[in-house]
Length: 370
Image 1 (spheres, rainbow, N blue to C red):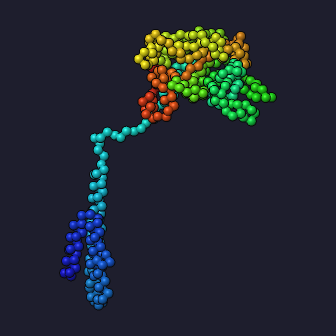
Image 2 (image 1 turned 30 degrees about the vertical axis):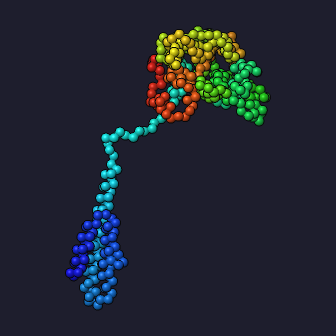
């Protein structure tokens, strides 16, 4: 009994003194391992007489159970202490700034497209769309392009391989085909295009979208964005076009006093045609709209050619209209100071973080759509 009591006191002291799990495991092996002190005592029970076994067995087994329980309790204490130390070492320092969170931004081109749509929507225009892949008729013929016009050549236009019918489709070079598709719906019968009225006048639409041309430099890219406008009604004239574009420029650039001018020009689909310039200042390496003595061309337009009105099944003596087109990306460059058009297609998140817009920003120009 004295030997068992001394052994228990020694093991209890060693268990309590174990400073980590490794030391505790050494004590466990010394007590309960195959050659441990208590395991050796249990082996002696087989050589005892029945009376001795009845007396010593419960004492030795009780010692084993108490030591095993003490080891388990100490293990729990050491594991809890290790966890507390780990949590303390990895605790958050709330005095530090939060780690940066990456967030998305609206691309300047999409922002400007929304702003433009907002301006024209207030004037009563609705938005129309059309396919990016067009046929020759909608992209050229219906818009009064002559058969040998340079835009029909490979160096200006992306043509696809001929289809089973031998026709080469193409990536649209402008959003003007939307105007044709709004006025007319094409059906193919007997190998020749026939037309039926799709939307009767009066018509007042804008057509934003992607367009494609074989061109690339600081102010041109192979893919870019345009917005076309079309008005078809009775008694329409150039004065209506000029007022519409003047009002758009003032609202878009948020300058009531911006000065514009119209210069005669030529487009196959309008007659008469004009290009519109805005007053600007080019000094200092930047273009400043609404000041200075320079001029910058920003869009083109004119009265819809009678041939186009006739192709669309309308009488040009009864119906007239005007059309215009402008580059969305270029207007974004002018309004928000983007130095190189190619950067807008560069997929650089740093550029977008600098020039991008909040997704919750009001797209309406500050000049005042009510």
